[in-house]
Image 1 (spheres, rainbow, N blue to C red):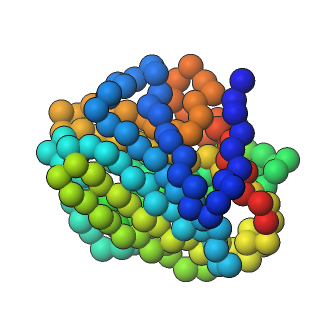
Image 2: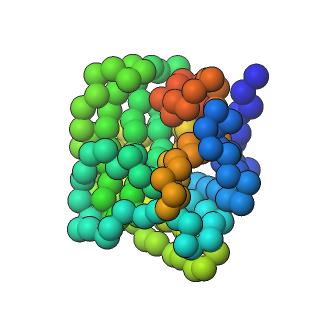
Length: 187
């Protein structure tokens, strides 16, 4: 059974785990802190990894781009309780980002118009990498309770990709699985 989480404090940190049917690196850990703001959400993904092991995309101009998940990328999925439609957000260490709307699981994908592009920041050392994202949500999403799925693709320099999430309900990695939406964000 999948466990549901509701942050009790604004900056509560949740651990993500790698999907068991892929590389399960025992020397990497990943967590996320998520906070609702008056205009949307703030997220901080914190990855404990040796700097020389992490594969990162080349820096680029902050702009919308597709296929960011093909290398190290941090993701967020949001939906309103009881609805099958949802949004997907990708935050790349390259500063590129993506936002999509789906009408149902992997169906009806269209680019999502946002009031403002996400703002990302990076923090790194020899033993960690962190990505912070500030996301302005459409007004109707700011005043409603939301369910979230938080995930990441982590690629190492040897080409291994691990798929991290708060919940892995399926036998294969699938961040779009409705059972992944275990984080409750009150209005």
